Length: 196
Image (cartoon, rainbow, N blue to C red; front, side, top):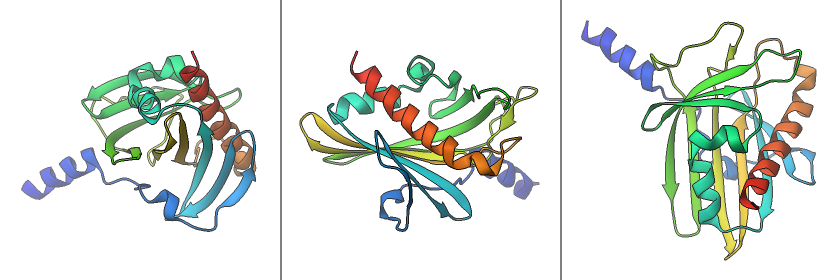
């Protein structure tokens, strides 16, 4: 009985795909150079997308917005809703364009701070209150990381990397375009939110 309980607890808090060393990986395939650099690679059997852009904003101001997950629907236009399930566990619901089903994921996140570096990483977990709605595709392997590196007082390299699998009825031949769109939209919307 104790083993079963331990397995349930471990699966609830999961040990998801870890992208904390994403900037150390080599052999990225470039999809787009501007206005946001977007590339991808295969990592542990998953397609990982990465978007990078130097923003003319202070690292701490950017970090404040990224960490405020409750406000994501106001910043990132494809995020329909976020529900905090625990202090560092959130249910995120995404609006996909027609004809694709919406997506969702439940993630556990952590923050790492160093002198000129800030990282916000997340991976999917199971949570009893993370209810999957009918017609929505659950991204069970969702994972990602935001890495902010201060270049000067008001200049920060922003890197966003994520597990690029979309599952459901999304065709593989459309993934490159989807990753370019996602990377460009996310960093553009973040930059717009910082410019208000």
